[in-house]
Image (spheres, rainbow, N blue to C red):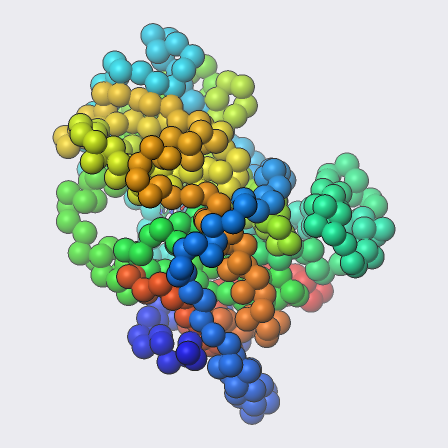
Amino acid sequence: MASKEIINEPLAPKKREKRKLESESIVPKRQKLESEAKKTDRRKSCFSLCPREKFDREFPSYRRPKEVGYFSLDLERKILYDKSRLRYYYTCPGRGGAGSSDDVCFDLRLGFKEMIQKNDDDKEYIDNILRWILKNRHVFALKSKEATISTTTQKEKNDITETLINDNQKETSTNSSNLNTDFVCWRGCLTRLLCSPYENREGWLLAVTRFNDTFYLCEFDTEEKKKMEANRTDFQKEMCYWGWKFEQYLTTAKQNEKPDTSSPVNNCEGYCTIIRTRLNSHSLFFSGEVDCIDDKGNYIELKTSREMFNYNQNENFKRFKLIKWWCQSYLPGVPTIICGFRDDDGIVRRLQEFKTIKIPHMVKEIRNPWSPNVCFNFLDDFFSFLKDTVKVNDHRNVYLFSRVSKSNEITWQNLGHDSEYQFLPQWYIDAFEK
Ligand code: 0WD
Ligand code: CA
């Protein structure tokens, strides 16, 4: 079925006028190109998530994620090319070294009214990742020898990417405008995709632009999500706060300090890691927010969840929460997740440590468990589908991929130039055209 017709809602986000590049003189040529592109596009089918068994193959090759950088965000959400907002995990002396404990008492409701809230109307797109790329172009250069190899086996490809140069090899790099990378996005976007074979309650919208043969991915809120956000009750807002407050009880700004739980909580500051890796033939470059680091230098992801009292609650936790947690932390190679189990009054009384690599084994106890193989093979196939579908190599062109809730089809349309989903900023493009 032609996918163009399936998307029946315009789902338009706020206009981003400053991103637009209206140049009247090229309009007729542009329209011709677009109509050609659409003709070609209509021949392509949509991507089906069913049957799930088609993704149930051996786990694909996913190269050990390599951290190639980091950045921080300050209270004004300004990017800083440092680790200043990286926080340290605090182990209370009484709790010993492990993350699990039955005798904590964190009141997550404290300070809700004082919270310094990030302005969610300021959409950040993938701008901070792009800023980091421009500052660190050398990370993407291949040594000239490797750049010339064209036909390779999977093993060789992995080895080649491994030789992408690092800081102390800068001088041997080629200064090409090509990033030698297939996909650039937020980690959250990859988590969303990985969970898609098992999650049909929430739809998603993904804008894709191919520029210099790199595919840039940016998620947009669906109309459904916007409605839900707008209708959130005060209590739902407070429950979101609980997650931020929990982080304050367990982390410190400096090592060997005690947590400061009396200052206002904010969700503006943050620390993000930058990761390079490869999924089969697809090279990936993504960034993800990291909650804190332990005294051995390992990242830790912090979560809260409602305390469970019966088998059904435990099964739901494994089926719906652990899949997200595993995907999110496995992608960048974060080894540990620490969960604070809370009651309905926002009191955490129990901490439990989860080792990311053990999660898939833990969930095998439930009937019809989710499978990491399905998640990763789906992502691998979907990336191949993107490469086959997104043919127009142009920074102004956006393809919109959409998964409507409860549907098992991923549909798409080529929006052409200057759509409201255009997300690559001009300053980024200009930097490559110099
Ligand atoms: O504007 C956009 N299009 C997006 C911006 C889309 C996705 C993310 N972002 C920004 C976030 O504001 C944040 O700075 O990217 C950063 C996080 O990226 P990510 O690591 O790829 O996001 P994800 O893995 O979905 O979430 C990691 C953490 C969350 O922790 P939990 O434990 O809830 O998974 O990032 C935070 C949150 O702490 N986070 C956000 N915080 C405020 N507003 C948001 C958000 N919209 N999204 C994630
Ligand atoms: Ca977290």
